[in-house]
Image (spheres, rainbow, N blue to C red):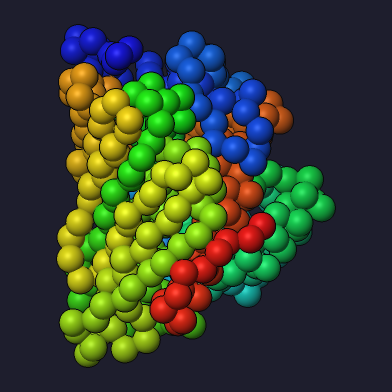
Length: 374
């Protein structure tokens, strides 16, 4: 196995991402396999300005701090409906007044040359609306996962970006992380033989009965939050698209989960015969992946953590540097825009997940196996 040596383990994020492949040779409709030694090796001459749309937990605790570590982009603006947040962010990050917007004047961002990229960090039901608005304003877009509520919204988002000649990327930050990239390589290149079974679980305890994540109209529910991590694992390890799915739901706390399931178990089958035994939950903390192949195994535990993803295979422990996934993601997106390269995680990737999510929803309703047609 071509794992990094222990003395490389503490390499800095900046040194690592400079050598990290962007996978530009791969089709924009396929998973890009990383190859060390090809990627962006220099800083952009001019940093790209990023505006965060929605200042909840993910923006406040992860994206804004990550933008203090990026080399090729910076926090240029914000969009919020809460004046007190706007004032706090302006003071904390020295954001010019002209770069602060609300949801009523959002379209005016079109005139702002400081802002190159709009990062949508809103409830799922608002992803399509604001991605399309940003594209119509001539801004490149990063949209948080899941991409949208349904296949039609995803297609509208892709079309809006194409029509306005701007790029679209979906916020699957794990695909920019080296340990995750290694299991992608092991699975897709059949290093230990063909993948036979991928088992993955992702979930946390959600106790807020009024939070949008437990409201159906907002696109809530564990499948639309943590569930796409489990689905992604099966898809990026096999490099295939599922051709059928079965699913079951469970609810032990109806006081909170009145509109959405608490836990979902789902099983996907791939054309090669590989199987994904997957689950997601708002009722328990789970975060692991195990893959069985013809000649071995590999695993990640935790597999979708923000930092410190750890793993091993029958050949030994993975020893890759811990990086800031969000910073690596935004830096790479900036390079792709600047150099007109395909995105590692384009809109088409988010669409593929939503097609499977819709099939899972149908399987939950009917209790039957659902064939996935594309």
